Length: 108
Image (cartoon, rainbow, N blue to C red; front, side):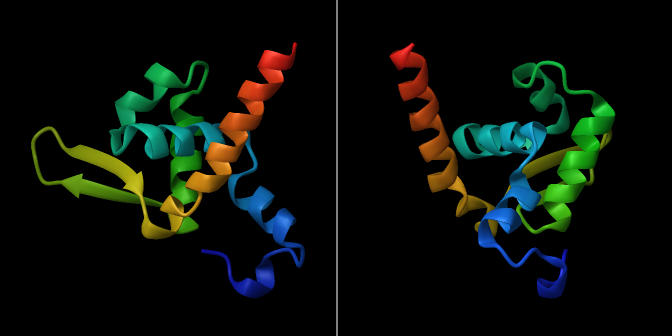
């Protein structure tokens, strides 16, 4: 997790740094609107994401405290990703993006 000193001074820049790439936004979208997911669930609804990119972004979101990873001691191992309490606070941002995107598409 980044320290306060490592984050940009501007709050908008901080938010962009944490969730500002398309893959992170789509991962968060899945977790916000579909709930907890296994690793193999993400590519079904995020076309074009590679396993490496998915892994890197999930690790970054986990490191930043937005996503939690739970490993079940089973054979084969099962891993489930879900939003942390902090991650759940992003829902209004994603809702606003959803509404804006819908309005934009309807205006065309």
